Length: 334
Image (cartoon, rainbow, N blue to C red):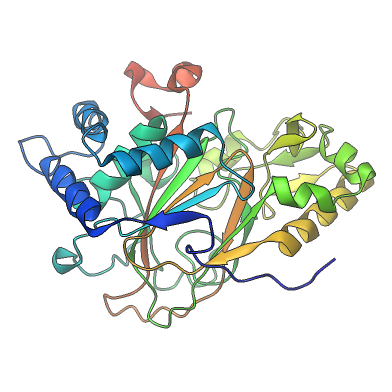
């Protein structure tokens, strides 16, 4: 099995670059969500405006997202370059823990509209205080933190696999690249990794012999409440095209065969992974059901111009989590 990770960019078949006219049209629509009184990203009224505004985005963008929603392809990842981020008006890259976007901006509006095109935006109260649009930035003193505030390598994971309602998609928008242009988003899809697994490992990964706990980005209370996590499989669904729930840091095998299978799965992900080096305006949609992602190391300078991604989660069926969302909102409180 190969030990090296192939390098790719977003020009390698995972997506497309918007034409300038479409970029301008996206920016015009996004700006309508930054005006008009209510500009609070987490309010149901603003999300409703973003849902309607999605229909005003360029047809080619909406078509690309719709096609991905129907089938996310061999890598389970879509990259669209040239999205508006309003770089001239950007403030310094945030450096505080738990940084989020509460007030509408062009990037936050773009993320939310795309989320509404895929399904409905979603957040978890125990992570980033339940904000729908979250900052992924390096934080001073948290360089070795294994999460979105760190700058060391981040291992492969699906988002929030411990939760009964994990997101179906994770959407990132690159606002700033890192200084050295070495930070890479790593992705590995089960549709490629599956072929590298032995039949015994496939069978083991489908058995409920693993536990997954909340990641470090969640509050300690969330970890405590999931201390006795119910065993579940890493893979589920169709044998030929399964779903994944796994995070290398917080998924624990409960049997020797489960441990061997999880190690083999990790090697298969490494062998089939690709690395995306994002530039400002790159939108990345990851199918969280079939693709794991991580990050390479980079070197933050904390000078206001560090790497800055914004992120939102998406569910294709908001109703299935109704018992976790008070007042039928978008925030899961438990």
